[in-house]
Image (cartoon, rainbow, N blue to C red; front, side, top):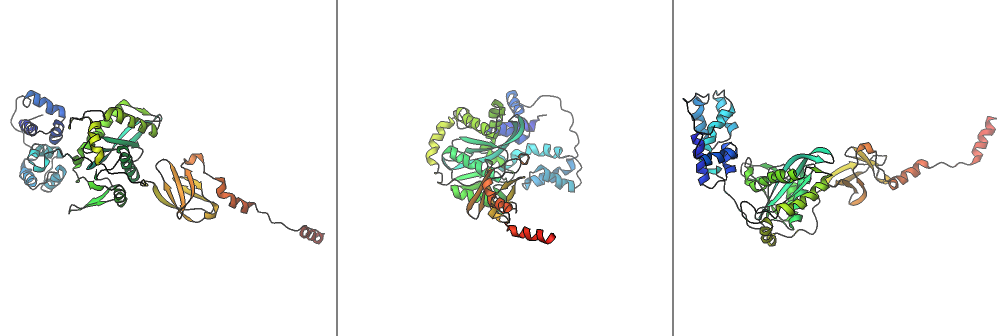
Length: 396
């Protein structure tokens, strides 16, 4: 139940201009609870009885000391007081810490506005929907320009590194240019680790992507993903708008076609709640500040190596595909793109190209690959008939 301390926290943060949604998240309650309290002008009335004793009471001085030291993680605080003998649950600890969070200097949320062309924020969302008459988990990457709030999203079946890079590139192409920096969460496709010195170790291929498109990679501080709050709100907006309007798709291609249509007809013409401007109009002022796209597109294909069998086939994702017979036993490089095809290279020369197929459809063979092998197999030794005549005369 909302108490007097909660009410004081609500009014204090409201006076600071903090959004109701952020206040609710801070206090661990529903936004409607905050809204009703403000409309009511105070906490719910009711008789209060004597304070009940809590298992936490003997350990509150320890908790207060940890909070003063800047340790606000409820689970870490729980572990500390368990070492001192605490046997209660974490919910008691969190209930005690919650009203004190407004005292934490760094917890107040400040709206950070970026200049035009400065930053793009990137994040992933997921939802279960119908693709081709089948319920599937769909992943979608959302990339939003920090200044204009124009965003783009792309849906696919994976959120690995290659799809992350492809999604960022598709958004750059949709915007018609690149930003000075890209702010990402801490997924391994982009960030390897955060060191105690504050230095971020980025994925080598993500750095390669950044160098190719000329942006500086930036990462959220661990456990502070709301640094990327603009983009995270767009994840919810897409779930509760686009995926409510469209609930069934013929394919991923069909889904993404509808996404572009929805962005242009629904998202871009809207008046943004924070900046109070039409997104499309604000984007027009940002376009001149975007950097040009590179002439050559970055290759987001999977890169793997295979040794061709002596039968002239290589194995890729559970099925076998033919390669030129002259390469039997050779090591080859394959590049699998995100559209379902792959190329095979011997050195720098492309020697084969196939579309991925499930194993149930059987091995994939290009007849010209094995013509040489068949000639060797069908070669028949020619002998003079005199040999057979000699054999016959000897046996008789």
